Length: 419
Ligand code: HAM
Image 1 (cartoon, rainbow, N blue to C red):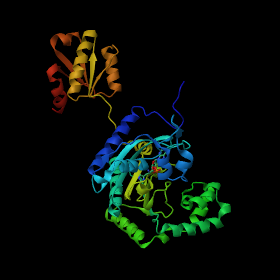
Image 2 (cartoon, rainbow, N blue to C red; image 1 turned 180 degrees about the horizontal axis):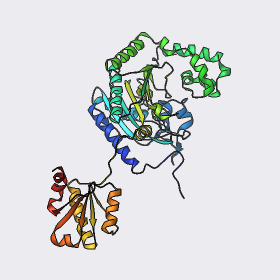
Image 3 (cartoon, rainbow, N blue to C red; image 1 turned 90 degrees about the vertical axis):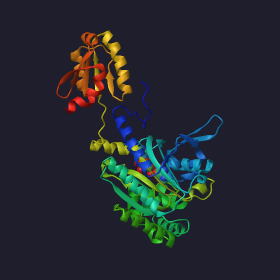
Image 4 (tube, rainbow, N blue to C red; image 1 turned 60 degrees about the vertical axis):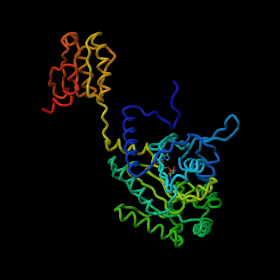
């Protein structure tokens, strides 16, 4: 048997209906906040992520699905969406269209991580990127949008963690200090951290190895090194959150696992998710467009793991998904079946979710199936009914039955039971 590749999975009905509902809720909220959809390719040149996300990140150094094309170009299945969006922004000169551009995307991403609950190798993100503003109010607005989305899905047990990781002016001072500290604690750190303390010391704060955690806790806090402009930006961001009554916790070690961030970083975590408890990750990335060869452009965004959202929805039993037919057609015999196929067409064109079975059944067996599917009504179509043009319409909930002519079925469905 050929099976799905480890770390990937099929999304089957009825779970796929939960996905559709979550996606629909997301689009509704995003449109309220003025976001337009962008769809970028699933694979890009490897260089985009190496430069954009950073050579020394886990994503680029360990987790990418990279392969040579037939013309020996190096391609990579996208591990995230921000670098592709900024690439498209530069390539299509989207800055010409408006002052501030609000884009969103939904789709699969690929990282070769060890699969576990809430972590897979093909996973799906809903991402949002705001290009062209460095106002802290837009950051709070994006978080407000996220909260509205989560509340519409009735996901409540979450915590917002925020931090500022400064900018190219103030961060070097912090990194110098960090390097000095790390050099003294070499023996207590893992191999990766020792390498990173030389190449990219900020990444050490992001290390997940247990034995490194006590060292990481003892390291200096970046917040003490913010310059005046970064400090003001962060304070304003926090006050915009406060004025919206959005609760948060400042976590000075929150540097995120991608190199393009500067100033504001944030995550939304949920205890219901277990070990992989980060639902959303995001932040500001004002330098990314330049790194990718474009003009300096301010950027802020986040991505949310859809698998993790679905896990929470399923745990809470939300959102409720109705896949039950409104009308179950029960034809008895071949002539009746042919008539039922045409009726089904008519009802569907009239927006009725109508179920027609393709296996010949007795009335008893049709009733059993209609019950199993939790159909609201059942229409009996037998030879007598075809002759008389009158059909018994049964309400499954309580077995109440009336007789209707074909032209009346729809209006009866909609009105008679309210009497
Ligand atoms: P990220 O933190 O790498 O950020 O990923 C964002 C979210 O994607 C995570 O919080 C998690 O919910 C989900 N996720 C990541 N890896 C996996 C996985 N292996 N399996 C399941 N879910 C996963 C980014 O990707 C940035 N591009 C976010 C961003 C957008 N920053 C600014 N704009």
